[in-house]
Image (cartoon, rainbow over all chains, first blue to last red):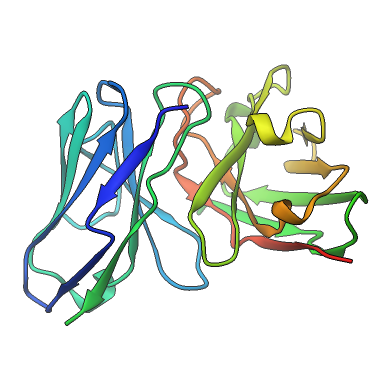
Length: 107
Length: 121
């Protein structure tokens, strides 16, 4: 299976900050990457698919980029609702795998 | 709006069986692939398996092949996960999740609230 590695594992930031999370794949996945966030006790929510396409209803402060094996999720001007755990997921092949998660916490 | 509501979770002994259901509404259920994704307590997300829109194709992760079966009833807008020979490592919250198309694209655009399955003696 393709391994997905996110960095950092934990990220501390303040409301209004801009942050970037990185996701690396163990082999090329073209642009077949999605990003989700999840709050404690809740289901994940899709943010971005095909590496950079914003899901309907997701605020424009979220953006994604990358292709091949390296991808980034950027959140500009953090809002209180954005503090959550973020996961990347490849859907190129095999058992579609997730990264281990990045917890975005309030500084 | 899309709604997915899981039911059937609970505590089960190792080696026993359990069936989860997922009631779907707010979209044309029979047009979309459906998935199960699980999350062990305090851990990350793990894809379990898929059933294509018409129920004619399934794929599973290796660790559940031969033990778990996904089916669907498009006339009742319901998805099922039959879990047999359960192991302690199957303990997790199980989410049903909707795919964006008939089945060729494996990301998840809507999720249920999850059903907790605990495998313990």
